[in-house]
Length: 184
Ligand SMILES: CCC1=C(C)/C(=C/C2=NC(=C\c3[nH]c(/C=C4\NC(=O)[C@H](C)[C@H]4CC)c(C)c3CCC(=O)O)/C(CCC(=O)O)=C2C)NC1=O
Image (cartoon, rainbow, N blue to C red; front, side, top):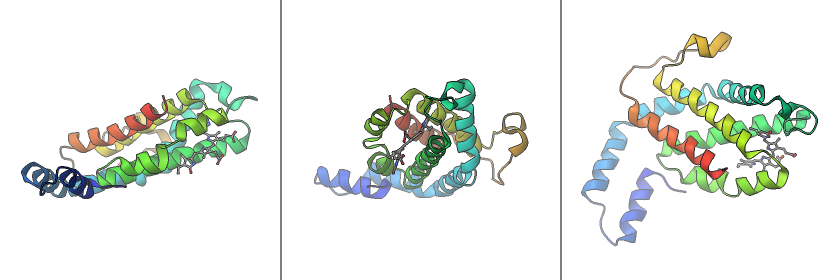
């Protein structure tokens, strides 16, 4: 499991070179932009249960067979497992976003997940859809562009200084995309 710093060390070591110009510049950027990263992690983590339940509900609305006999969110035991998996995936995405590296997500969450789901009959496409909705909601929270129209009764705006979040939100988006591609 690596982070932005240990990743730079491993990369330099594999070239038997000291940590140099470009890597140092990139780590300086990591530090300079650190508060945005922490705000982005907080934007996801403190809205996690809302993001997860909304995504699973949305996935089911689009495919109500999931909660009928034979569907993978039926009975309640499976519904609970599904909501729990949503929380697990989102939690590992916040770890990756905090450390600036996908390895924690890859090694501890995605490794073998597709095989597990296939063995259990958990539908991969539906899972991908739920992760896609979690991505849309999380990116809106990071950019503070969530709207009352989309949030409904549970609409909540974070206290944040609005700045340029393009880079941190596209990094966050890339972790959701990794989950989707690991399951497809
Ligand atoms: C550390 C990381 C980690 C992950 C990721 C993880 C996933 C995980 N999800 C599981 C089950 C499951 N996962 C789901 C999920 C879903 N069903 C649906 O229809 C939806 C598409 C989807 C939710 C979005 C369901 C329903 C089960 C139970 C399947 C069954 O027992 O039949 C199982 C089998 C054991 C169990 O039921 O607890 C594992 C190991 N466990 C871990 O420790």
